Length: 321
Image 1 (cartoon, one colour):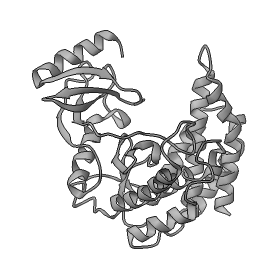
Image 2 (cartoon, helix red, strand yellow; image 1 turned 90 degrees about the horizontal axis):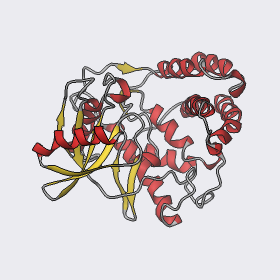
Image 3 (cartoon, helix red, strand yellow; image 1 turned 90 degrees about the vertical axis):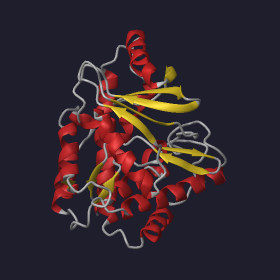
Image 4 (cartoon, rainbow, N blue to C red; image 1 turned 180 degrees about the horizontal axis):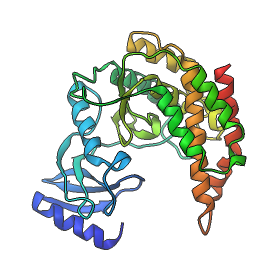
């Protein structure tokens, strides 16, 4: 964000008593800032100016789900207020409480996230929190009008992405897409789906998870979509990264069992959703690699992910069989 845009935001929020605005790292689909309000630390999320605030840029939709989940006992920030603005020139925004914690993907990021015991327990707690989200009735949360996204729609979504990348990056993806469509499990009762539930989208400290964050792509749909994504990101063999926590975290089987225990029922056909998650990861990383290659100076760490894509597709096949 340019200095001019930051000055505009400071001017816009000053009458609300917000001061000390400064950019926070992260947030590809919206702009994130820290500040103060009446002596309290706060976070401001703003849609990118100049763009229609739709899909993942719809920050008011993010505020809606956070506002609904807080009273239901899900650890999320408190929404203090939102402002619809006048898009696209004056973008929508919302202001929420600041919560302490780090956001780290222990099996992907190279940095320390805490002791091995603390991080292992963080995985277990995340599984229980995910189950708590999925136990909630969308209708009772005021989400009865939300369209229900079917799992096969997820397949179609990532196929659209894969059609835009170099086929050599993702050999055989069309066959896997057809296999996913041919074996789609029966529907179950819809739930709130975070869409990117993993430790990297949680805040946590030494005592545990303090908040579930980054609700840009939430929906109402099959909760097992979240479970599959969480589990592949909890598996050290998914990306085969060398981090301080490899070999020290709970197994996928333990986390799945912990989720089911907290949910109070079995999550059937999980292998299909693990395959879908590998397919989704292939699509998202292939897009990142494509954009990285177009940069004047490509990031070698992102380019290195290209070699992982065929292995991700192979894991999808393994789960389907």
